[in-house]
Amino acid sequence: MQKWRVTFVDDHGEQVDEVFESAECPNNEQAAKLIRARRLPVAAELDLNDLDGRTDNPTVKSLKSQNSIQILSITPI
Image 1 (cartoon, rainbow, N blue to C red):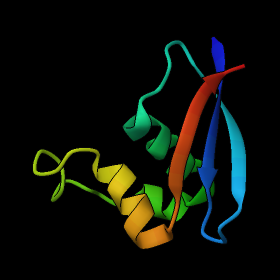
Image 2 (cartoon, rainbow, N blue to C red):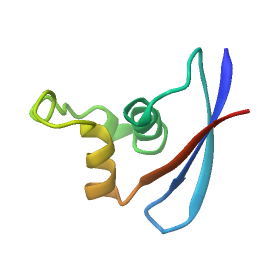
Image 3 (tube, rainbow, N blue to C red):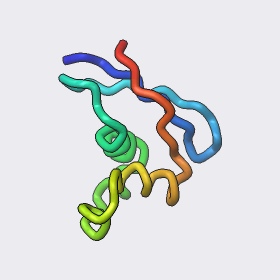
């Protein structure tokens, strides 16, 4: 599996790098789900079905609006 570095701004305004393994480069939505599962495990259990299909990238938007987490880049290692 390929390792990917996801760089994002956390809820304290600091730039953070997290490394994830995935066969293919994760898109922003997939990366947001990985970040949420690792950094906010309780929130990862919440159902976003009310947003699913009605908005693009519901996890990305949820992280930004509710947790002030914004993905900056996804790069291979």
